[in-house]
Image 1 (cartoon, rainbow, N blue to C red):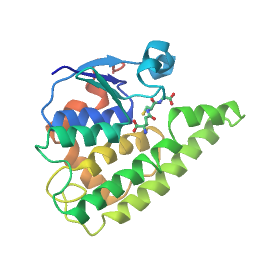
Image 2 (image 1 turned 45 degrees about the horizontal axis):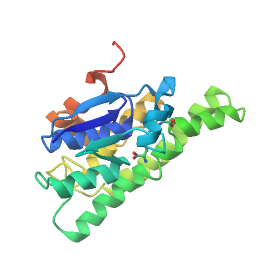
Image 3 (image 1 turned 180 degrees about the vertical axis):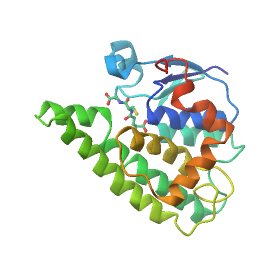
Image 4 (image 1 turned 90 degrees about the horizontal axis):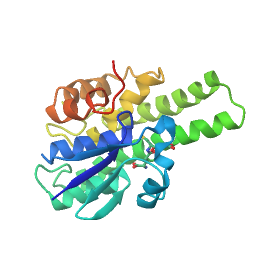
Length: 212
Ligand SMILES: N[C@@H](CCC(=O)N[C@@H](CS)C(=O)NCC(=O)O)C(=O)O
C-alpha cells in the first residue's frame, strides 16, 4: 500500500493528517506544496483536490481530501490504535471538540481568508488582530469544553482526534501572537508534543520546512 500525502510543513490541517498517520504507524511519502508560492493552485494539484487546499492523501489510487474525512477513513480502515473512544457519547464529544477547531476557528483564520481581507484593504495589523480574535475566542470555548476532564490529553489518557486537531491550532495561535494561557490546553499541548507521533509530525521537522 502506497500512501502519498500532499502536505506543506506549516499547514495545520496537514499536520492533523501527519499526526494521525504517525499514530497509526503508517509510513507515507510527501509531496510538498509551498502555499506561500500558491503551489496548491497548480492545475495538476487542483485536478486532485478541486478545493486547492492541503492536505490530500493518495491511497490505493484514490485521492482523499479534507483532513477530518481523511482521518476518519484511516480510523475505519486501520482501527488500531483508536483515535475515537468506544463509548458513543464520548465519540460525539471528541468529534464536537475537533469540529469546534476545524469548522469554527481554523477556516476563519486560514490563509485564503486573510488574503481576502488584505485584498479588501485591511492592513497587516488589522488582519493579525482578526486572526487573534478568532483564535482566542475559539480556544477559550475549547478550554471550557474540557476543563473538567482528566488529562493528560483532551479526553483522558489516550490521544484522540481532539488532540490531533488542537495541537496544530495551538501552534497557529502562537504564530499570530494569540493568547494561549489556558492551563488545560497548555497541559494537553505539553503532553502531546512529548508523544512521538506529534514530535515526528510537527512542522519544524518536515522535509520541506524552512531552515531554522
Ligand atoms: N478544512 C480543510 C482545510 C484545509 C486548509 O485550509 N488548508 C490550508 C492550509 S492549513 C490551505 O491549503 N490553504 C491554502 C489557501 O488558503 O490557499 C481540511 O481540514 O483539510
